[in-house]
Image (tube, rainbow, N blue to C red; front, side, top):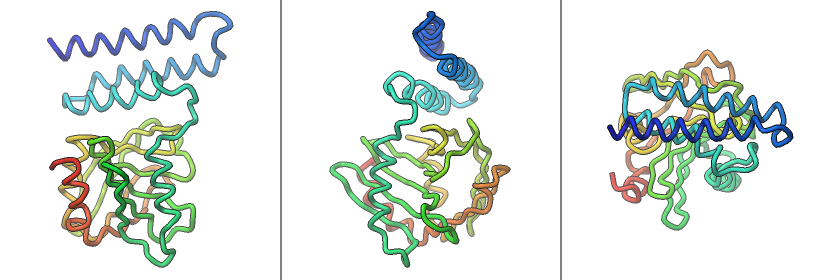
Length: 221
């Protein structure tokens, strides 16, 4: 019952948004197309088998639309990681950890690339665990299939694009925690994907189990 009600609430929001977009003179055709894309993504969320994945999917689809007036604006986390990476020693490409207030931010750039590099991000932001990939150039796909391979095994996932393709979201909350737990004993993560700019990216996460401890404490897991 609760899940049905939640789905209806999101559907109503989507219809209201699209209804507003259809009013003559209010929005450009490009914006209307974007709203139709939002509804398509919302319908795809309803097909997620896991309740947590459905909720996370709805958050990803609707939060930027409802709270951001500039579609190209990047998140606070993006800019915080950008500032953090700007302080990195160019010879040190391992995990970097920084505490900003109650938030704990971890970042690691892709090996064998030149700045600006793709960056793997693990964070406890606003008491929510997040696992993301920040891309210097946008990825032109709503979702991407990724395999994360390590010396301890591999994980097959589908990540969602946010922030105009600059952020690939590997999960928030419990789904992110579940993935990060599987990486704790790994030394390096290699991505396999049909998306060329992602395929073969490698990240040095040596010492993750120790380095991630402040983040785990901040997000209480």
